[in-house]
Amino acid sequence: MKTLWLYVDPNHLETADALAALGQAAEILRDGGLVALPTETVYGLGANALDRAAVESIFKAKGRPAWDPVIVHIAGPDFGNAMLDLLVEEIPDAARRLMKAFWPGPLTLLLKRTARVPDAVTAGRPLVGVRMPSHPVALELIRRAGVPVAAPSANRFGHTSPTTAAHVLEDLDGRIDMVLDAGATAQGLESTVLDVGQSPMVIYRPGAVTAQQIGAVGGPVVVYQQIEALETTPREAMPSPGVGLKHYAPRARLILLEGPLEEMGARMTEEVRCFSRERVGVMLPGEVRLEAAPAAVYAWGRWAAPEEMARTLYAGLRALDAEQCTVILCPLPSADGIGAALRDRLLKAGNLK
Image (cartoon, rainbow, N blue to C red; front, top):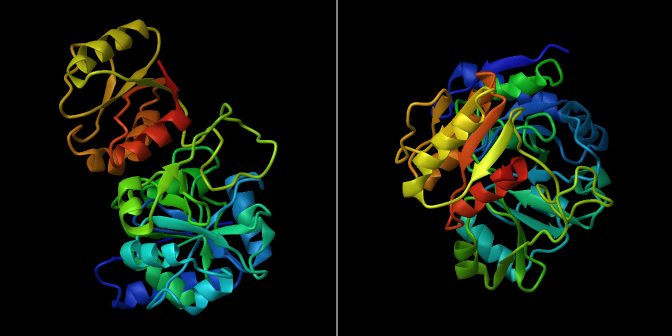
């Protein structure tokens, strides 16, 4: 299969080239094919969510196991739209409040599925994860396709998520029909995943919409705690995307360092020297200074602006992989705000020292 790579300017969807690309991508989705599309979080690998064979082809292309459910993306003028009605049986009041506050945006809600949703989407579980993305290209593509779009991250299973079209092609070139390139994603981390049917509500995957924001709108909420060690092959289907497995990892060994920021430069310098026989990469926040030491350095935004670090986390890990690093050192942010999402991804990708 030859993967078609087309650019769409998200600020000019009215141009002839943009309309042609969107139309071609929509036709591929309707015909059961695979299209990698930009969202505000990461690039997703999209297929018609109501077409069992199309959804199963996502798993084949990614090498994704059947026990890991995928998220369905919708578009529409409101939150009682036809796409949502195809997917979910009922919408609790708390969910409606959260939709009004955070949709379109990076919040996935786990809701009771209809019989129209294939088991492949939910790993056979009764809840389906649904969100409405805010990226203009994603929304327009879904509208033009006229079907809800199942779209996990557009990378090989377990690898670092893609935030550019080039990242998608590094993993999936020749395995999917098309990638729509709209430049780098704005947020860089996958959506928050929330089960609104439990009391209190449960965040299965932290993201840009934080527990504090959810609590202020929807009511009491807790963050899911993994009781058992992360597994490569779970014994049963996962309750939510992004739960219970080693995930988001670069090819290099990722070593996480936790401690006071003012001590991090000296500690990282010492760690680099300890790995003198390896090619070492460093995810380096702007406030941290590394002493003279042989390492490949990725400028990882500012510690004081965790949204910058979230936006460039995956790009940095991929860049250091491209530098042939065998070890990557990375400081572990605190769990405040979006820092909770950063910690979640890093702890699933590496090991704390």
